Length: 317
Image 1 (cartoon, helix red, strand yellow):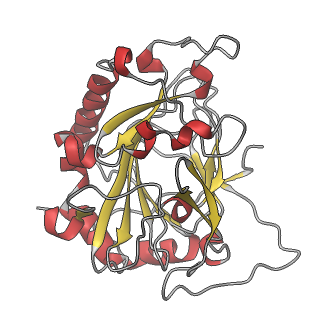
Image 2 (cartoon, rainbow, N blue to C red):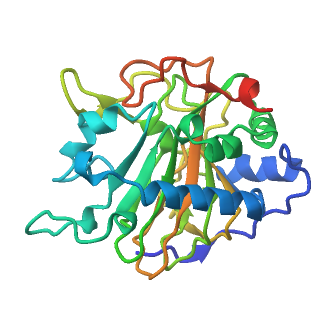
């Protein structure tokens, strides 16, 4: 069911790099923040051109035709395959489930209209995405959020293809990038307008203060991936935690945004997106930041490259 109300208007962006006190207060309260015009039109054009170049140069002859799912359901075993688990230091392509025939499993769409996402090391291997990720603005935002040693990981383009772009159920980013204590923050950047029709994000405001990270997505011993109970901390250090009232009804709010908008997403925040039912794609670029001083163990599905996760403060010019 689609959310029934919309997010408040994006707060004015007068003080980037870094966050204003109003922006920081809003993020602290709601667990997410919409920052319009964070990327220039020229940068958006550059990233869309790079995305198109990548999509039109996929070598299908050597591709295992790996589909992307959220890690649950009857067709989720492929999530743990080698192609996925070794994408930490590569640029790889993951198909939409609906791009394949349900009876023959053959690809029904041209490759550039069938890819769900490209990941997970764009900020390390693609010069345009690296330049748009490791910026003084993003470093300043990380400082505003209290990061001491922010590390960049899991950079990817999510295409949300016309008509077949799948829904993403409600989730918390720290489930998939767990540190002890949790510290993940998503930097989600619209490369195209995100609307109700093409599957914009929706958020459960304040849920980051009420929803503990109870499970995490891990590598299973031997082979594959799965979920396990969190044995460490379930809330970030220093977070003011609230208890949800027994009769309190919570409601997701829509986050329709224009191209160039940066959305900051707290790792404990519950958020989701619906299926793209329109004839327009909803391409976005996202990367995540974790606190380098917190424990990030070998159980996490995404393991660091040989040089470790990218140091935002050192790499940003």
